[in-house]
Length: 129
Image (tube, rainbow, N blue to C red; front, side):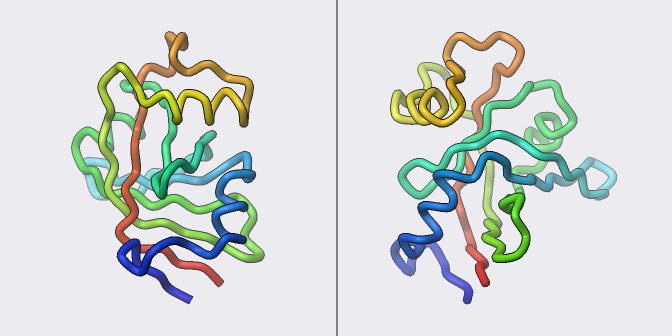
């Protein structure tokens, strides 16, 4: 089943999995066009995905140069995959996103020094089966 963001929201079961899953894998594109794949902590808030990363990490540098991103839940038996565009949010970060990280991971991203970049992923396409 494929679903576009304009098709309204994901099914409730998919939203619940996105809210509860601890890990997502993100794929970014290096400047030499090779993929870069890493696991991250993430939250799903108001139809968008968020990850707090190091701005100078490989994924951070990749996203600064090319905003195309894919994210997939760690569990692959019934995948949920998002293809979209990433952007770096400036502080102050949305309180709902800060609270989502605090609730999910007991992690206050607002006071974090190492992971200093909040990436917002706006979905272009959802894939689920």
